[in-house]
Image 1 (tube, rainbow, N blue to C red):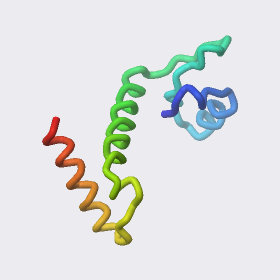
Image 2: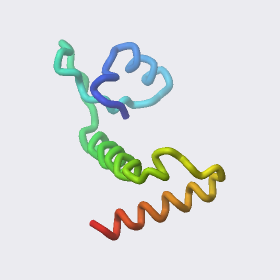
Image 3: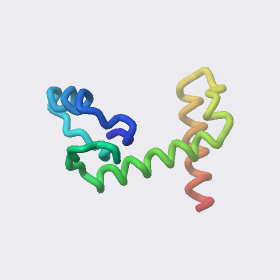
Length: 86
């Protein structure tokens, strides 16, 4: 899954060679449009917005914690508070 900026024939060919189905919306300037799964792209957008919300927390965005388990617990706390606030 990628954004419209990554819509190129070379990238699509590379993904197809690897056996991957590209989920990239068409660039408006493209002459030949390719089909893509709009529902899968919508799910990507939800995940991207979730990461953007997590990065609002300075501790997570700058990765102050040196240990992985401490960082993971900070992410869990932030995600819980974000979920609870909505």
